[in-house]
Every structure is written in C-alpha cells, then in structure tokens.
Image (tube, rainbow over all chains, first blue to last red; front, top):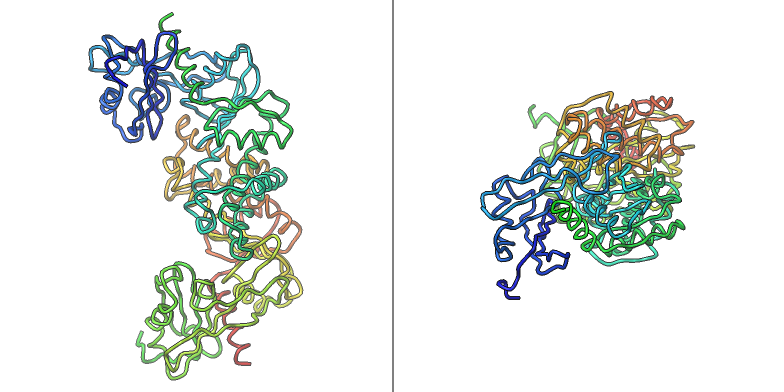
Length: 301
Length: 301
C-alpha cells in the first residue's frame, strides 16, 4: 500500500496493556489502513505515548488530525487519566479527555472507562465495544459477555450500563496452566471437545470443588495417562463452567451477546448453549471500530 | 555439636520436591541430629540421590545404616519408584521399596505413596504423617487435613485410609498473588484477620463467584485504596473458604485433625471454627518422625 495515498479523516486507536492498534478511517467509517504496535501501556511512561502513536500514524496525517482512543491508555498509568464514569451510565461515551501532545497537528481524545462501587469493579476498553454494539443494535436490552483475560458480564438496559462483573478466568487459565504443577499435564495447544464439555458440566454442577478438580487433572495424567490436549480442554471447561455458575444471575433468561476473540467467544457460546441459553457471537474488531466511530461522531456533532 | 559423638541407630528422611530433611535417630526414636539440604527431588537425576543423602548423613554413620525415607523421592522421577498403594489401604506403611545404593554400609527404604482411582488423586509424604498420627492416636477415626501447596483431606477409619481429596489451594494462592494482575494489589506479607474472615465467609456462601471476587480485589485497590495486607488476607480467606465449601463432605460432622506448617494450620483451624467445626492442630515435624519411626520398627520387627 502506498502511504501517500491515504488521507485519514480521523484515526481510531485501541490501546491496551500489551499492544496498540490504530486504524486510518474515512469520515463515513471505512478502514483505509491499519497498524499495530507492541508498545502497550505497560511498556510506556507518560512521555512515550505520543512518539509510539506517531510511529504508526504519521504517514496517514494530512494536516490537523483527530485521534479517538480507548483502553488502558486512559488509566492512571496511561497517557492521560480519563476518570471512570460510574454505573448506571449511558452506553454512549461521555467526558472524553484530551491527551497532552506536542505535535501541532495532533489532537487525541481518550474515552473514559466505567466503574462500579459495589461490588467494586472497573473496565477500560470494553465500554467502547458496548457503545459500538448498541450503535449497531438500537434499543437492545440484555447481557453482553466480553471474554478475555478478564471476562466482563455487562447488563445493558434502556441504553444504559446497569451493572457488570469481571471474572479473572482467562488469567487464571494462564497462571494455572503455566505456573503450577499442572504445567506438566497441560499441553500448550490442542483441544478435545468432549473434555471441554465434561469440565463445563462438572464445574457447573459443583463449582465449589474447582481447586480439587484441578489437582485431579494432574493425578489423571499420572495414573491414567490423560493426554495434554484433553487436560487443556478440561481445564478450560472447568474454569468457564465455574464462571458461568457465578455469572448465572447475569445471563439467566436474558438476551445474550458475546464479543471477543472468535475462538474464545465460540467456547462461551457453546457453553451457554449447553445451558439452553442461546447467545449471539459478535466480531470484536468491527464492534470496537463502531464504538470509536460513535465517539468520533459525537465529538464532531 | 561434635559429629563424632553421634551414633545413629537409623536415619529418618523426608525428601520432597524442593528440599530434603534428615534426622539421626536413636533406636527409641529420639532425634540426635538434624540436617537439611536444598537438593530436592526436582533438582536431582537418579544418580544424584545417593551423594546428596551422604553429604548430609555420612558423619552420622557407624557401620551398616538403615535409612527410611518418604516423599517425592519415591516418585517416578525420584531415586526409585515406590508404586502407590490404592485406597482403601492400611494406615500402616506396606511395600517399602529399597533404593539402589553403591555405598556398602547404606540401605535405603522408600515408603510408597497412596493413590485413588476415582476421583483420581495421589499423595506422597502425607501417608507417613497419617501413619504417625495414628501411631500417636490409636483407633482414631475422622478426617485429617494436611494444608500446604497441595492441601489433602483424608478420611481415616478403622486404621485404613478410606478416601482423600487434594485441593491446589496453596499453589493457587501463589500463582494468583504473583502471576496475575493481582500482584499489583497483594502485599508479599502482612495480614488482616477481619479481611481473612470476610473472604472466608464470602467464598463459603458463594464459592462459584471466586473468579469474580478475585478481580474485585484489584478493583478495590484501584477505587477504594484497599491495602496490600488486607488484600492478601482476603485472598487467603477466599481460597480457603472455597476449599472448605468443596471439602464439606469430608469435614462435616467429623472429628478433625490439622497437620502442617503451624501458621497455615492455624488459618485452617480458625476457618473450621468459624463453621462450628472444632479441629485439633498437630505439629507436622513430630508427626512425620513418628510415621518414619513406625515404618522403621515394622522393617526391624
């Protein structure tokens, strides 16, 4: 692609802990170019954000340029702190914060995250996916599940975020599979659908026995030669099953949408289907861009 | 202590994954000397065990010497594999296995672990503490809790191990406190009794919400300035509470003994007391030695 051909009307940015993604956008919301950087929030100090952004987007700039960013870029350790909105709050973004810049043509707005006082909880980045989902699905009421390192369950009604709850399921999976004795039993890839469903049903039925079921995976490897891919799928089933048991007050009897990485989202949709709870799977990147576009339009409107 | 004064009648060894402890013993079971080594099972290949042992005990040897060892030394990756006994099995040790040695005066016996087919489970080392506890408490029936990296709950009746269940609680605590986002929120030491009890009660009441409660600790640090020692005690309470909920079929209405590290054991005794389940705390080292002594006496008897 010839960089000189791109004239971005504005630039969308999803800036997380580990990575940053940027898109050159047309005024109508078409993606003209995309860039990715490993300069996530955790690797940058406050002065590092502007150069890291310009390294990706400077070729797309033609005079004054507006950037709209979501994610950990707005945390206390980010480029600029964008104070959380408190639930209940509109699904439309409010109170964007301008980040300090030195480049004369660069204006950067950061979308605030959302907090909940009790039970204490926070999100940064997912609020923009919620905005995007509601922009695409007007007047939608129900529960949005956003699986990932920290999976969020979000109750949305009448264009407001009512409440939400974060489960550390993805991070627990990684810590257990790589940092405990189970690292000897869990393959780094591979899968077994039946073992996933079995783990799911076991944990849904007796979620309180999770820590015992985990050690059983080790013992089954030692005694019965359970294979690493089976153990991997079973562990995933156990953890997602325990999460579904805990999140039941959220999803039971509700309309459900699952937004996230497609493979992981499919596991949640499968797991919910096994509980007779049909869920719609939604492409995460498209929804993030729709949310950033909504925020941009509100800035310009 | 002058090493030439020690004449060990036999030598007791507790050889785990990370460390090895050895005791020079009199015929009647008095400890004459003690040694500790960081040459745990995980650091040794098969030929490394004998030199690692002799480095600690050779000064105690006066002619032919019998060593009785328990723990991971008898695992497949250990000095010699001592095949598991299967439950139900006697609390007295059976089927000790002799390890291959080159030193002409050294005879080493390894105590087998115990396995359970369904739910799959294994122990190595704890069986010797059970032997020791029963030697000190004749005809005792009830449930023995052995807290640690992998906490065991063991049902003992009529001098047999009937069934057991391992919970990975200690290892989960370490993995969560050091390998997840909670590492920013959890102090490496410090304590808060009220936070421990609160975590305990929360997890006992709703054990399935564990993964959500974990993230709440992070959010409470961000939003409410929860202190690291409070978060540490609360995490411990959550994990032990979830374990007690899962182990309830073991401890409910039973006589209970807790054998392990004294600080950790006290937490379990406190937690059980909060459930109106009184438990007796037992010194772990003394009980291990009593178990090794029982095994030695059976060899000689």
